[in-house]
Image (tube, rainbow, N blue to C red):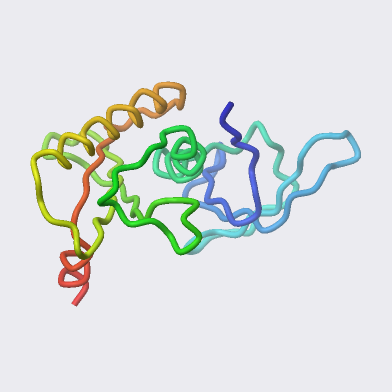
Amino acid sequence: MLDFTPQVGDQVEVFGYRGTFVIRECRVGADGHYRFRLDPLLDGPMLDDIRYPMITYSDEEKVRKALPQILADCRPWPEDIQTKASASSLVYDIRSDEMHDGTPRVMVTFFLKPDALPSLEMAHVRNEFYTRLREQFRFVSIESWLQFSSREERGALSVAS
């Protein structure tokens, strides 16, 4: 079962307020329910004593929270995708934007190992892996189009420069 318990550092949206907020403190109130202190991500008021039912996650943040949990259940991973130093997860980037027709989209990009050679066989392995990920994400309430892809890290570095 996926764990969506709010944690310090999570980016959330709050019913009745505009913008994105960061959870700075989580405590249990006198009534036994979670209470949160939130700072605005960009600018705006700091919010205190916000109750759990008022908090929601954007689709991008839902994917950010769920993906590490889902990856653990989707082994084996393709051999040509980079793993983190601890080998407990894969190297990826998550971004959201809109498709050409205005449909919201969350993109998960996995980075290939620098020495990975392109092959049709590995492309099939990655497509099967992405299918397993999509199947697991059926249980996460996301309204955006969810897209998985992979690329060489060199491509990401050249875009940044």
